[in-house]
Amino acid sequence: MGQSNDSAEHGFILVGFSDRPRLEMVLFIVNFTLYSVAVLGNSTIILVCVLDPRLHTPMYFFLANLSFLDLCFSTSCIPQMLVNLWGPDKSISYAGCVVQLFSFLSVGGIECILLAVMAYDRYAAVCRPLHYMVIMHPRLCLQLVAVAWGSGLVNAIVMSPLTMTLSRCGQRRVNHFLCEMPALIKMACVDARAVEMLAFAFAVFIVLLPLALILVSYGYIATAVLRIKSAAGRWKAFNTCSSHLTVVSLFYGSIIYMYMQPGNSASQDQGKFLTLFYNLVTPMLNPLIYTLRNKEVKGALKKVIARQS
Image 1 (cartoon, rainbow, N blue to C red):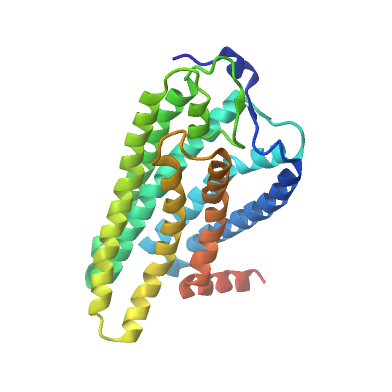
Image 2: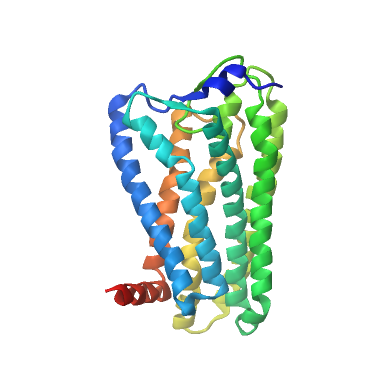
């Protein structure tokens, strides 16, 4: 396997939806709007979690990390995509393509594991409320976040070079609007089954294993909630977990569909829109989901706004 000198020197052409210019303009407007909302929303969540002492708890520590990851996830490729959608130039440098791929693989992996960590945090809050602060002590929280970051970075460090060094026989046209692993693997003019199998193995560890842990955590949570006799108590426990469960469903649903299937089985356009969904729509919705369903975040946000006014 060896990288094409042509792509290394001249970069790649991100085809995207260039055969449908009207759709490109609609996508530019929609994506610019969603990206602006995502940046504003996630920045606000981080700011509120840092400034309000009442939110200096494990749940909001993890939420601030999630918002930071969502910012990184979208910013790694949406600005470049907006540039490509706006005009006739669809090119991206080789270095830019590497940065996009590495960001996608690392941040996506970190977020998958962080969502499992957040599920464990909710399990401790609902099932072990009296021991919650003992279980979720600051050192453990830092260690769990470090494991998430380490696992995501290992995934990117291994898979990015393997993907980029696949021989493409001079082909530079990526049938996508960003440098994503499935699209780059499909361009290979050599047998890429070994890389696809390794990607699948990493996906099992980074996507399916955390998902299994999330499902187990929510199994225990559901059992604990059903034992609560008062309706108010059951509603409080449900409300504690509903935001996280919604985010998990949105993120994992699209990720699993994209990465846990053979390389050539999904239609190209379907893959593009799914990528757009978990790279832009989910990061845009996360702050709204947590803010609208969480009295503490809403209260902290009002407090911060009142200070500034």
